[in-house]
Length: 352
Ligand code: NAD
Image (spheres, rainbow, N blue to C red):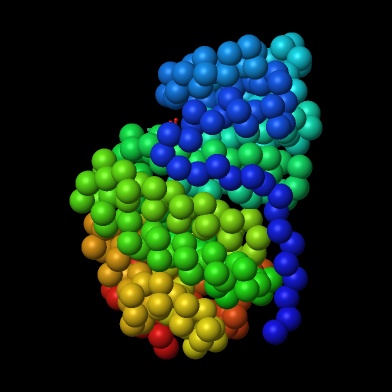
């Protein structure tokens, strides 16, 4: 066994009602907070700001998808004008992305209250867009200092978005199991993440107000985010990035349709990872189990139906083979053509 383990320093408060602990936690990072949210979540931001009393000196509620540089400029100007010493973000990956951009630019520490399953809160990955171009990077200074997970806040997340986002989280965990830079802790977190999500997502589909299932799913997504923050992604993510870029396909849905096939492709080269995944999914072939889980949740499994053009397979395979990410099984154009041909039609995965 040989590995490097480099833990990320963040504090987690988890549990129903824990948003009420933000006021007690905040003094650990600052005393003059700018509260961040999207326009849709302004009420949650106001509520949280009220609970912080004079420690909340302002609200910036213009967070939007993809963290545009112009939004960061506006938030940074407000942060300077109010002389804040930290941020408190309440929302999903877009709002947390804004907090990260402010950490990068102004060295402001953040406390975040995630309300989706994206997992960005526990990764050192930041992203910003300008003129349609997205720039991303890794920097430990953007990692939130404190994460307050309150599953009650996810009860309002629509079931469809919860499922898409939860399946996306499973993809992060699956690839962490065979990442070239993984380690035993990452594998433990990944296996437990898959177990918690595979158990809770069907329960959320059946009843989106199931508080226990919501807690389980958020727990699984915390672990999946931790895996994403600690280990690299491989073939599956390369394929999804390629398809997204080449054919403008929907992000979360593409992940769902591709994952079982990417896992089937990698299975022969990653037996230990498959053993863990199988255990987490209740036994059997993990690729097939993932396919059944996603279809059972009502996900579209055909890439063609998600918008991939009929002649896209060869093009995508050629792109995926160029500059591949490190992967347990060597990536061949022929292998990717076979994999994608089944995914285009929405067929169950097979290992060839
Ligand atoms: P989001 O933050 O864009 O939120 C989508 C919408 O849902 C927003 O209008 C938001 O206000 C609303 N919303 C959030 N929580 C809600 C709730 N509980 N109830 C009702 N509505 C709610 O969506 P997201 O999926 O969390 O984040 C996506 C973004 O995060 C992408 O830009 C992605 O690139 C980024 N991301 C980054 C990382 C990273 O490590 N840097 C990881 C994952 C995702």
